Length: 139
Image (cartoon, rainbow, N blue to C red; front, side, top):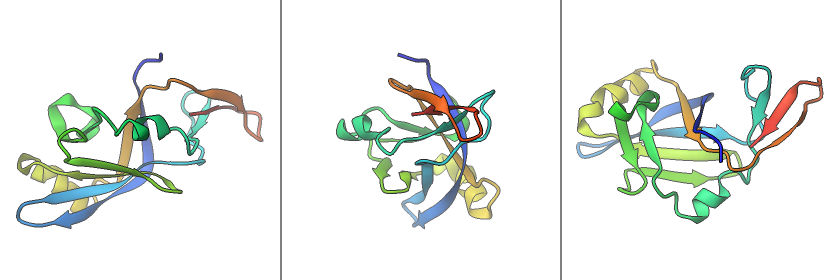
């Protein structure tokens, strides 16, 4: 099994809902079939089946963090404060922010934070060359 990997993706994060009790942000954590930027001599794309095993298991232990920091927990699937869904575009998420993370909500609402990323452990991957001959990893 591989080590934990992180991908910073250009997928938009947006405000999804706001009430006195709940402030929700979300967007796509990953989009299928789109080539990444150069990741150090290779590019990467995500197969639509990449998240199937985790989805089938009910997304156990998945956490949302700000900047991948353990000090900035935003929500978890176990608590129901993070919800994940797969559609034909990619992996969608919605996270209900804790009250003490009003700064994250404000940064997203103002448009200062507009991108999402995700971390993962790849149990399988496939390597080939893209049309230009560059190494390509498919998750």
